[in-house]
Image (cartoon, rainbow over all chains, first blue to last red; front, side, top):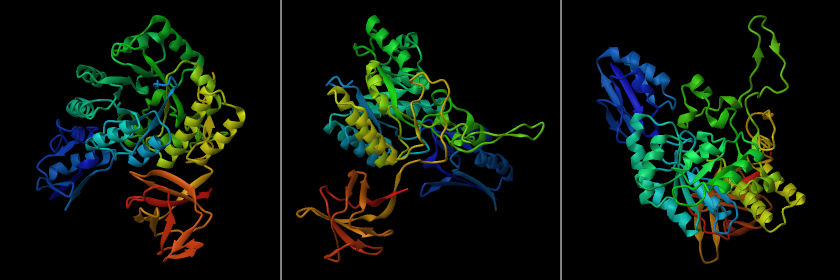
Length: 76
Length: 413
């Protein structure tokens, strides 16, 4: 299973995660910050759990590209 | 420009502590960012859109103007938040928006918000001033201009009667003090290149502040450098030629430092306030400058130089990493209680000792920055010379202590 997290409040809206993993990230038109699709929020952390392992690589790329280090991608 | 005709002293505010420090030390205006779209998105994200009314409220009480920075590169997905921020600023009666992107300038003008042109636009000539006068009432000049060039632009604005949307002559703003960037007007790719972290989105990683070596790849020969901090400019300081700066005809003097500590804002604003006032009452002198420079050296700095204002062609690079300040603060404890009638504050000591004779610093979001010599202190209702970790101590104060206040002592470096 792939687990992706986003600490959304610290996002500076640079758009890199969308470039790396367009299937999992979008930029919100409302506040200009990243949205992790199909995620659940708990205390400011948005978590996506997926059985589709093919999303891991793009999400890891997003993690590496994020300038403020608010994305993590793990395979459990 | 201020009502009194003096050059306007514009202070940075990265948080409420710094804002209050600026207000208490004589700033005429303050600039600040909210949310992510400003040039200090990484350093000081502590103002939010909901803070705008409080910021404006505090500034209005002291008749201080408020400028919201919205000066990053803007992408399509930012357009909606830009509109939200400008609408909120307008509703909160923020004086003006500091803008770089045309999308920001266009929307601000559309809703009748005053616009100031950011340093990111890098204005270097009178025709650019004329162009932006269609949208903006105040424009900051490129930091790479000499004072002679700035004066020429100011003179030409008066001669040609170049007016902004308000109907008044366009006001020229000039950087007075603070960090400089190795890149022209902050337009730098270095941080994005190495860390994917764009300086132009307010997320600069400051790689330029590190030491570097230069190696000839062919021979492996390392070129000997006088100074390995080859990309880290010293801080700009105009205090010792402030008379020449004001004589250019610039109307606003901008102090850099939204990412710096509140005591930095307090010291720098206080010093420049005194210097500006001295200029106008003809008491600006070499002796005074000497005293002021000593004050400025106490707070964070990378060494000082005069920038490009006096015609210098090459930059001057800092001689070490971090600050060259002559003193620093160490955390001691926090505010616990305030007894308003006798005017006594109780502190909980959590780290270092304090003793009578120490220089004390108290900072907080409402308190701002208060610095004083510790003349007396009591521990457990008894007079004491020293308070140590774990103690609750009381100190007579001439200001109201709050639970959010932090107590520091100042030590020599």
